Image 1 (cartoon, rainbow, N blue to C red):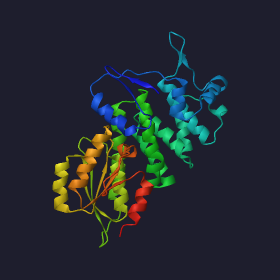
Image 2 (image 1 turned 90 degrees about the horizontal axis):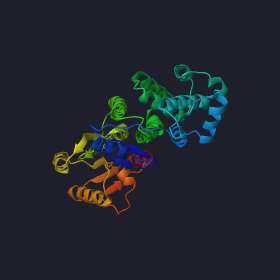
Image 3 (image 1 turned 90 degrees about the vertical axis):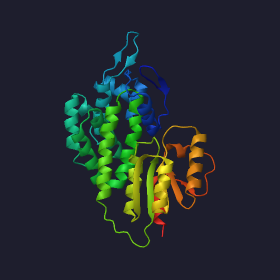
Length: 329
């Protein structure tokens, strides 16, 4: 496990907890100087999916990357090494031979990537190139990759197979100090815009069987990509939505529910907190909204092991929720 270092604090991070990391970052790092750390070969393996043994072969035989050494003779790699390796990994997945890539510069590898994007390719390659576009803050390239992924896979599968794994990869990049809050906002603004455009583009004609959902994030929860995607799924299935969005106090939610009387509530809980706090919040929801079924998704629910109140239903995946919503009258 890696240690992420900055001016006053040290944290250990679970590599899978992408959303938890964002919240730690927003709450604890704002205004503090970040100390960038160097990559070991194991770091590169985790970030690129390329085995350390393969990276060493590419170094010695094809001169793909050249490790640096500290004053104590410990090998390390730079940000540029990471990005170059990601580009090479993508092109190899496309079917190009490593020997044909060994003499190419970073810019030439980028050009080769653009050429290759005219052909169908795998999810891992989309993810690799989204990472490179994000670290370069290249919105044109980022949107180009998203468009190609959507054409190849369709919108929903792009979110599930590309965007969600990409967001997990972001957690690794934050941990190693390769990106900061500007990168996070760059990505979230693009993804939020894409989701809202997709939602607005859905044909929507409610009928007598349409249910009403109130969708919200709990107080102090601000990252809504997950909630927006579930909003898309619900609207696509012909149901009505009152979308409240970020950081809704529970008493304000109570007022809205009393006015609209929805069939269902939907929320996501990702803010890091003790299981007892999650239990207390869920209990409040269950009591205050006893006449509604409450769907709850998010990282905190995935690791929650207490018995849930009868009117609260845990959502562990998009696939599971689609099965539930398909059965609604």
